[in-house]
Structures are given as structure tokens and as C-alpha cells.
Length: 319
Image 1 (spheres, rainbow, N blue to C red):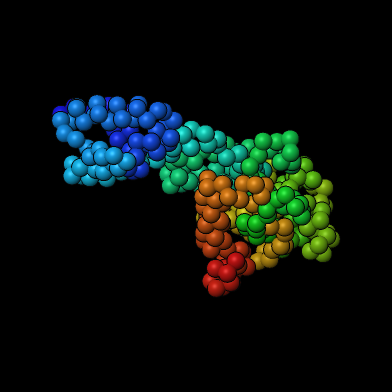
Image 2: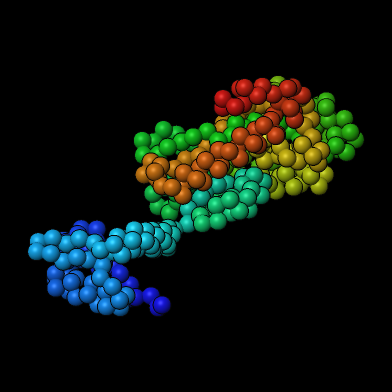
């Protein structure tokens, strides 16, 4: 048989739930006679009664009792389905800020995995050297080296970071760069934007490590850390690099540390407005990022790659 009109089915469901045409009319914002008429039309269409009508009492017939749970469940499923679609249509993409070098070297290679596991969540990536403000910029979450203590923000450590010099294996061997005094024989690759969050300073590093016979002014300058890494990988010189940006290249041997020592630096943080802490899409994205950071720190731990030490699993898991 053809399905009866959905509106008539809905009027039946509300009436059966309340066992009252009056209460059904109040829920549906129509008159009692309109509800009664719709139910009568449905009964005529089906060919059997759904209600026993007695003075001041409305009860379901046997067929009405059989039909009610089926109709109730079906309408609830329709209601949930439409609500879910409406919620998805009202959800805008999550605006994610990070430094361009971090985006290309760490985040972007992972985003296809996020899309595969969370296809309903859209992301817009904003890669910029300029610090985000969260006031003038339309941003939801930032991956950076910290904003300081602001009451309206939540800040979580994502990755610990370290600085150390790297070069190709061929350059290290040719110029005997395990002796840092030999840095005078090669080109130093500098960051031309020293105030940027992912920048490094040869002058500061050499001073901190008490290396006095190397000219820190020597070399080429680039305005992004990933350009410095690319230049080092192509054999143009020695880069003073951040672990989060070069760990995978060190693991594959494309670049190698000059020494088994690192300079601990400020960690990479997740920063977002407190008002987004209960947003389901943001919660999924944050948990995913935290999981990927734990994978990274285990697979590319600085102790194993640079310091030639075994990592402490318990300490890493606690982090």
C-alpha cells in the first residue's frame, strides 16, 4: 500500500503519546477538531480504527497499539536526521593558525589523515609569520610558541622543541664539521627574521656554546625556516634548525646533527579561546593533534636521534 500522508501520521503519533486530542492540539498548535479530523482521515485511509473514543477517555485499539511504537521510532529517527544535517550545515570550518614553516614541515603532511578519520570536520589553515591576535583575526586555534598568560585563553603544550646545527652527511664528512671550529669553512644559513617565533640565531647559539672562533656574520639569509632547511638539504650550507622541523629528515639521514648536543627551547603550544573548549569539532581536532604529537615525540625523540640515548617510555607517556 502507499504510505499515508506524513502529517496525518504525525497527528496520530502525538495523539497516541498523550492519549488526548486536546493535549495533541496544544503541542501541534492547532485546534482539537483539526487533530481529530486528521486522525479520522488516517483511519479511513488505513481501513481500521486506531482509537477507541469514549466520553473523557481516549484509548488505543489493538492495531493502534501495534502501530504507535513503529511510528514513534520512525518520526524520532527523522527528527534526529534533520537535526544532524542542520547542525552540519551551520558548522563553519575551524580556522587554524600556525607558522608557515611548521605548516609545511609538520602539520600539512598529517592533514590527509585527519580528513580520513574526521571527514565531517572542515579546516582552514592560516599560515602567517605575523602573530595572531584572536581579536582582529577570525581564528579558532593557534599552533605556536606561546601567547603568555591570558585569562580568556587555554594553552596546552603540544611539542617540546630543541635547536641544533644540521648539514648533509657529505658536507659534514668533507669539512669535518664535528669540530665546530670548522664552521668557518662553510656557509652558515641564517634566519633573516630573528623576531619570528620559529627563528634561530647563529650569533646567540655560538655565544651560548662558547664557540669564539666562528664568524656569525658569514652566510646566506632566508625569511622562513623551511627555506633554510631546504638550502641545507641541497648542500648550500649548515642550518641552525629546530627539532620539530628537521626530525624526520634527521631520521632518514638526509640531514645530520653536527654534534650530540641540543639547546632546549620554548615548546610548541596549542592556544585557543576558552569559549571553544566545549565545541565538539574543536575537541576532536585537539585530541587528534595531541595524539599526533605523542606519536612524533616517540618516533622522532631527540634523545634517540641526536643524543644517542634511549628514551624513557614512562616519562614520554606521562607527558
